[in-house]
Amino acid sequence: MGVDAVLKRVDQPGTSPRRRRLTQVDVFVDDADTFARLCDGSALPMLSRVDLYGTLVLTAAEMEQLLTEIDGTRSGTTGAAQRAALDEVGRLARICRDDPATELHLEGD
Image (tube, rainbow, N blue to C red; front, side):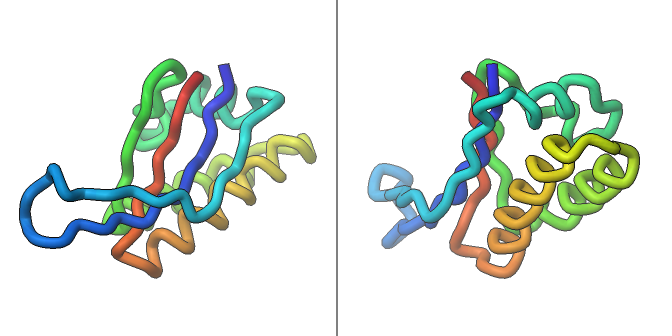
């Protein structure tokens, strides 16, 4: 039931969505379901939108809110595994924020 964070580069020559191509750049694999549990129990708007069984696609424009919610959640957790998971997703979110040609896919199992 983990939620993997996958950073993807978007290549879309022209305007047709059929020519849109995604390339995986980096990934955080939520093997221990740590990030999934944090999202499932969250009352924050962005983290609570994460679908444990589907995919939530976020663009660079949404990264500031995600990073704010990750930082807030991280300050309220004491577990090392929880902090490590939030740090990894935050790292991918910062890369996405700085590169508008990327998307962050939060993929549930």
